[in-house]
Image 1 (cartoon, helix red, strand yellow):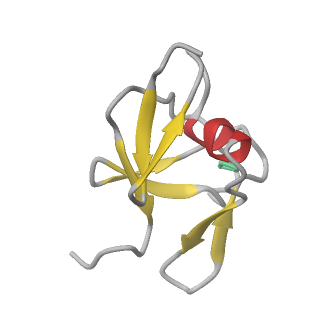
Image 2 (image 1 turned 180 degrees about the horizontal axis):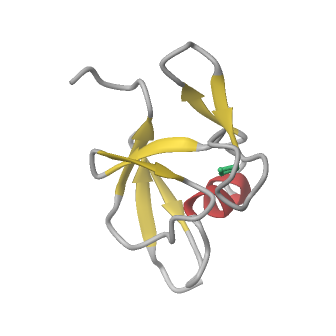
Image 3 (image 1 turned 90 degrees about the vertical axis):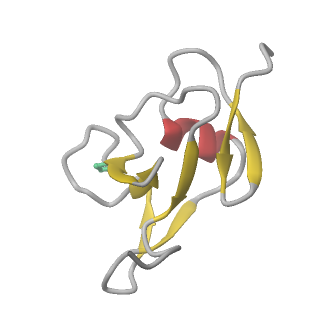
Length: 84
Ligand code: FES
């Protein structure tokens, strides 16, 4: 392990170079990514950026976790974890 990690809801998530946020979260045992605006649990589903089921906030910006590369130090949160 290289020691790279990002923050998910206060938890340090390790990842390998080239992994997506969703793959790293899945590898860490995190299968759902919190509720969306309609209260539906977001999750890793299509894996290609098509279904929008995996939306999360990355440093405050809404992104698809399945196509967003993990990078050290990112702050990743559930879509509805805060109110703007
Ligand atoms: S899992 Fe479908 S857009 Fe990410």
